[in-house]
Length: 94
Image 1 (tube, rainbow, N blue to C red):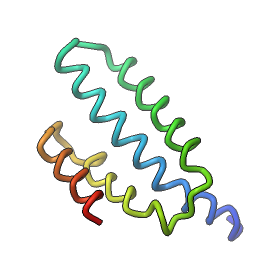
Image 2 (tube, rainbow, N blue to C red):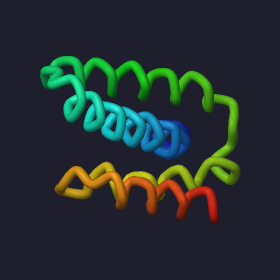
Image 3 (cartoon, helix red, strand yellow):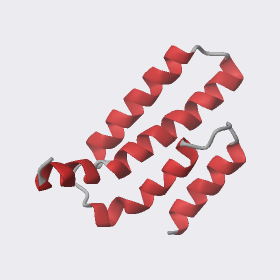
Image 4 (tube, rainbow, N blue to C red):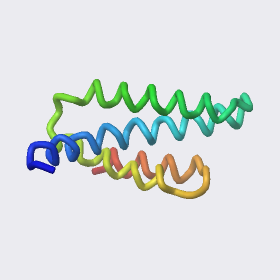
């Protein structure tokens, strides 16, 4: 991989983390209240990830790096709204 390709991938980590985090949190809430299917959760996550990538495409990594901390909840093994809230608080505190 060339250096410019690596930079493009690195710059997309923070928006992708935001989209995956938002998709997981909303999907968990929809599944709890509306008993939706996994396909709905996947589609919602994909749409939110694409939206985050589109909206943050012109922001440099030095401005968006705290969003990468949201990956902590994306990879957390159990759905827990309290942990999701704590991770969101951590990102806004940084």
